[in-house]
Amino acid sequence: MKNIIYRFSIVFASCPMLGIALQAQQKPNVLLVVFDDLRPEIGAYGEPDPITPNIDRLANEGIRFENAYVNYPLCLPSRASLLTGIRFDNTRNPDGTKADFNKMIQVQQTWPGTLKNAGYWTAASGKIYHGNIPGNDETSWNIAGLFWKDKKNKDWWPGIQSKIVDMGGREDYIKEYLETGNGSDALAYFSVDCKDDDLNDGKTANDVIEYIKNKRDKSKPFLVCAGFSRPHMPWVAPKKYFDMYPENVGTLAYVPKGAEKLIPKKDIKITSKVWNEGVNDSIAKRLIRGYMASTTYADAQMGRIITALKESGEYDNTIIIVWGDHGYHLTDHGLWRKNTEYHVAMRCPLIIKTPGVKGNQVRQQVVKNIDIYPTLLELCGVQKPENITLHGSSLVSIMKNNKASWLNETYTCANKRHGIITDKYRFTQVGDDYELYDLKNDPDEWNNLATKPEYKKTVDEFIVKLDKVKWNNK
Image (cartoon, rainbow, N blue to C red):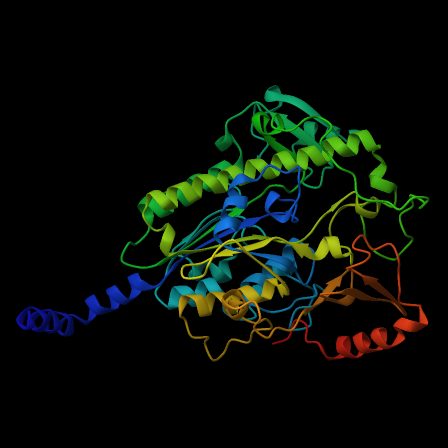
């Protein structure tokens, strides 16, 4: 036995590359799944209507973060923050110029680049960045896949109109989409009699499955990212996912009895100043059904990837992160879409399954999209480069110990309105005025407490904190 051990030691010592390869194989893989415009409208978050079996199953094996937020509720700044670990407010780049995604990404090395430099094989497909992976970060990837496989037609390929079996929404949006195939912000749904991979998210899943099964360098741990375009509007999905829901399934947002259905006359940029953008309650419910059908379709594509990961034998050694890029209005306060200071626009789903950490757990702490960069570094055993500045904190401590010390607050911005969300309040500065909502007792945010004398001390404390927070600059 001693001779065997001795001979193995000689071989190991004389082959340093073998030692590196063995060490690399011990590192966990990473699979990141990003959904576009997905708020926590998911079964795992206690919502009764959405059909999301694959996300729900992952939540049972991982940790679900109940109070996860983005710093800015739009795709561009939210994804820039995710990738760089820097808190962006979308008004200026670090050099003072107008906000531009490519310049945001250049602030510092993204975590895909950091992991690649640490020996990971990296590949992406779909919408991880704001559109395709920009040229200035392509070196972070062994395979820098496309957002849209068919950029010209996107999900409006020739012949799709003849396969539409049901549609609805705002008539002007429907007309534009049918005539041009354009209108990514169209408040409309389309049920299509087609296969899953006739649409882009199915193609994204195909790419990622191919990466995991055949294309990766199996001598290295892998980082693979899948970015799904749904449930971003217009809500286009195969018919079978619409058929899973009854026609009247959509639930309209809460409105207090006697409240006027008027959009607040604020100086904020929103698509419509008309309640629910002018659609009646019946159409609104069918639109929410379209949102959920699109979510179920995207969830199914994630399920295909998870199945392939298990078949590869790598599931147990893979960190899996499921993240939505911001919250979303589904008639909340008479609004659709995002980019408001409301709590519902900031809150996003976040689920992390990782080797060695017990699953089926929930964390109530306030966490942020900028926490993902440092979390991945710690989980992967990768040291933070000296020239990297991170505005977030690693989640590993509270993942391992729910009672670990944690600062339960995050800074937010929308439409140039900066604010703070804690485990109890949502506070926002609105010009010379303020908004303060008690999220425990008023989660739908109808009772502004900022002008009440008994909350003056709380408001003053938040004002001081806002003056100290760093945005954009490293």
